[in-house]
Length: 120
Image (cartoon, rainbow, N blue to C red; front, side):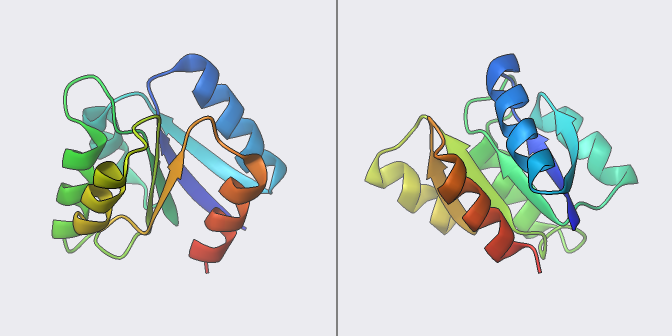
């Protein structure tokens, strides 16, 4: 069906989201930091990117802004998936170009509905 780049530094959360995505028939590429995600993006182009906000080094918000500003990655849908769940966080994600914002803990049904809607 498609490939998802999952950028998440928490091992448990990474395993949980990877399982949801694989059960939905998706291929998962994982990265534990914004920098690692950018390295993987140089060699592979996923159909969608799931980003945590709180990451070592560069934040998910910073990475989202860079991805949406780069012509090579600007068309890839970005889903921010974070424990940062205030209206301000959601507005910030929207302003940076995120296509969706899903709060943690993730509801698997909402998560997969959002992913399916964004992967064409």
